[in-house]
Length: 459
Image (cartoon, rainbow, N blue to C red; front, side):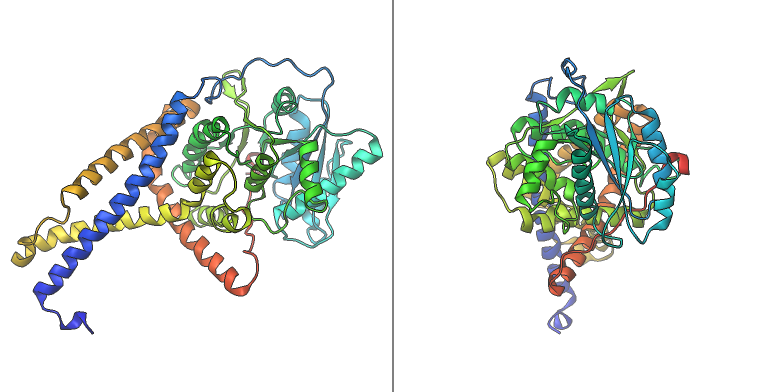
């Protein structure tokens, strides 16, 4: 009603002031975020080369006694992929001492049948006590209990637990790489290598850029600074004694069944208990030893997956983990938890570009609008130039890491994929905030949403 009573000149003035203030505020927030990212870049540049990934790690002698590994693979509704994944894992892994435990559900007979069709003494199918779907953490707890029973029955203790998903392409040398480093580290994480998709170069492809930069720069910086290193949930080995300590502190269950991002929290708990984490860049024939897998190739699937990540890490994680730790650790927690805010600010920035275009048209159409001062004052213009420089710097880093790991062809996609990734992150932030608010109002934990998996050999 108040606006309806304003004259045209007053409405134009209100439009001008609102647009100018919004532009200044968004430019300031974006600049602060850009400087925060720049600090990580500078840390990567000055830290020792032995920590910077991707680079071959220092030579480490193999252990005198081959450690035994327990590989845990949760599998709810994975009949389409679990058989092919297990056959490849069992048929290609070069390390001799391991046992695979696959978590199944009583109401998923198709996945049970796919696993039962594989006759291998190194494989144990574990049917959990509750019908699915439950959280991945809940399934992992059932696998942990089965692993303990196997240790008691065989008299052979495992040195470490390796986590994988039902769609993973585990590198044949993965366990051998773990074996050289797990004795000196509580957690060893191999890089995650998203597979390229010809049919989805932007949506599926943007994961290539994000993981290349994250696992080659962000996580090594965290390791160097002494902050917690989040586990990726796949291609990660955890020292058996360390996971046992976590289990003892939780009443026998090392993973919180209510957590949406048990892998992220695992790294935080290991750090709190004083365990050292290693981002391991090992190489074979010029390629990194890592875990390859398909990531969502459609808009809806990508938004659902990232909404779960944002809910578990930035929203529920804030409540569940707090702000404990030294300065470097709190800085990294802040970086994790600002993600939903910055995704929405980025979306707002895109909206402001559209509004500035409308403002330019108004100034062409209306003499009164043309007489208004510029929307951006001197301070705003300086911030915009700073943000432009930081944006070019940011894209340069993304192109660099993508090219370094995946070659020039993928690097050419990095710039358009940055825009697509920002839009996906914004949509995921909106979904995460909505679902988290609904969960709080209902007095229940946020619901877990499964990602539909694909395996290359399964189509």
